[in-house]
Structure formats: C-alpha cells, structure tokens
Amino acid sequence: MDISIDTQTLAIGITILLIAITTIIYINTKNQSKMTSSKPSTSTLQTTPIPTPTYGPSGSFTVLAKTFIPHTTPATVLTTIRNTNTWSQWNGFTPLFTFKKSSSTSTTSDSKSGSTGSGSGMSDPALVTGKQGWLDLGSEGDMAVFMGGDGLADGAKKSREQGMVVTVLEPLTSPLKTPQEEHQKKGYRIAWKSIGYAKWQLYSERVTELVEVGEEGEGGGGEGRKGTEYVCWETFGGVLAPVVRLAVGGTLRERFGEYADGLRGFCGEGKEEDTIGE
Image (cartoon, helix red, strand yellow):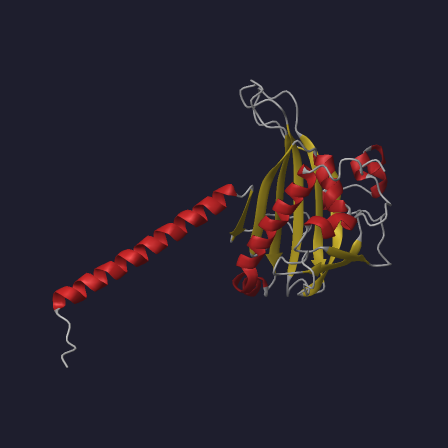
C-alpha cells in the first residue's frame, strides 16, 4: 500500500492550514478589540509607580483604572465607595467588609496627606462621619477578597482577607489647566493602605480621586459631558512586590477594571442618589 504524499499535495495542505490559523487569529483579534473598545473603563499595570499619600513616590508597580460615570456627582460616587453596605450589590472583587471594633472615626491622618480630621467634613454631606457601615478617616477592617471577581455569585469562595485602614478622606479641588477656565473642578479623594505585612516585605496604598465634569465642552459650546471622572490606583512596594506583579498583576488589572465598571453601573442607575443625606 503506497501511503506516500506528493510534494504538491503536501504544500497545498500546509497552505490551507496556515490560512485557517491566520483567519482564526484575525477573528479573535477583532473580537477582543471590539470587547475592549466597548468597555466603559480602562485598567493598566504600570511598572513606573504612581505616588501615594502615605508612601510618596516609592514603590515597585501600580495598577491603574479609569472610567467616566455620566450624570452622577462625585458625592454620589464617594458615598457608594464609603458605604460598605452596598458593596455586595456591585463589587465582585471585595464585596464584604468587616470593621474592627478598635477602629476610630476621629483619627487624624498624617500631615503629609493634607487630610483633615473627621469633624471637618460635617458641613459637606458627602463627608459626614459616624454612619453605620461607612468608611471614615481611620476606619480599619478586613476586606473579603475574591481574586476571581466572582464575589457576587452564589457559593463563591473568597481567596483571602486583606486588612486595611483609611488614610485619606478629603475634598479635592483640581488646578486650573488653562487661563480660559473660570471654575476649578471639585471632587473628593479617598485612600486606604493595606496592613498585615512589615513594610519592607510588602505594602500598598489605594487612592481614588473623583472629579466633577461640567456640562460645557472644551470650546464652551455645551457639547461636553456631565458626570464624574473616576481615577483609582494602587501602588505596591516592598521586596515581595515584584513577586505579586508576576503572580497576579494581570488579575489585579482585570479586577480593577471590573470594580470600576461595577461602580459605574451602580451609580449610573441612581441607587445611591438618596443616601447621602440620610
């Protein structure tokens, strides 16, 4: 039985196979591009660390996420982040938070952060303190972490618990970018740092900045967006930080993007509109 294959037939078969593989790769690339462009949020992993209030410019890498939340004020978004009672409705990454009994709402942050004590926020409803289940300056506790992002699913098991303490809770005023700008954009900043490791081993601090976006566009023609610009980053440092980046850096990037999407969806539906002044 002759099982030999002539050179021409073999060449044709290889060509067809290569065309099929190339087509599959092209289709997958196009689909991934469509999926990425359709996402309202962006998230990246940066090897150049972004400074944080507690640790300054030090660090090994940063996970950064951004999104725009339309028709929503910074106060509404801040309320959602501070109100841990709502996390189980939109936050699949860290849906549960347990406060430590020793946690104090009257703690004053390090002077380097520029934050003020909790009493300074009493004139601003978004910075009100002492509400059950809300993060205040100095609040300390443990977050249930679901590295798979499935924390909202029934039966999902948490990966671990991460201790944290709120280091910054303050109003934020952005600088004027051009002489034509008449009003500074206002917003808020909240930050917390992880606890549990010695600083030389591993440290991180997560910062969230929320800035209002006015109705008018850059040209003043009223064609711009109105809502809140959300920017969140967590910078990691210590001798274990490179290991964390290699092991779960990509996963953290995905979770930060999903966190931003969940926050955007929850606030965009107006579920937190009436809770600020309660």
